[in-house]
Image 1 (cartoon, rainbow, N blue to C red):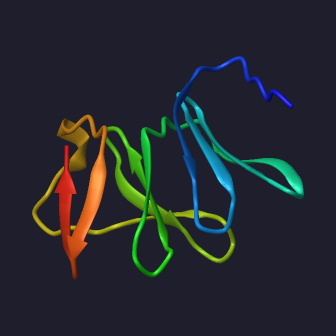
Image 2: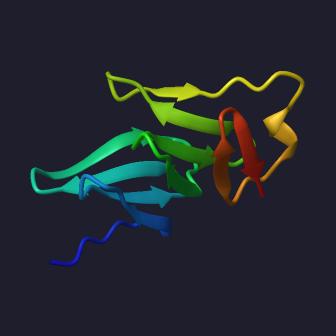
Length: 103
């Protein structure tokens, strides 16, 4: 089955639970055996990263690094003294503990 959306997808990722995540210019979409669900709209998503604890992290250009809480709402990582508004994030990696590589 082909899933198509008007807005171009920027990145596609399959997590360890077999969810497929589509990062778009104005949305984040999850596809799994239960169907498709737009998790949030109105923001650009560039990248998905799954850490060793199977927590998913999302890169949002000029916004920062976020994860979905239990209510499937975005929560942003707070990094002191760093302003994401000046960064166009295209890739993220959690190195170890609280260290992040942001490109």
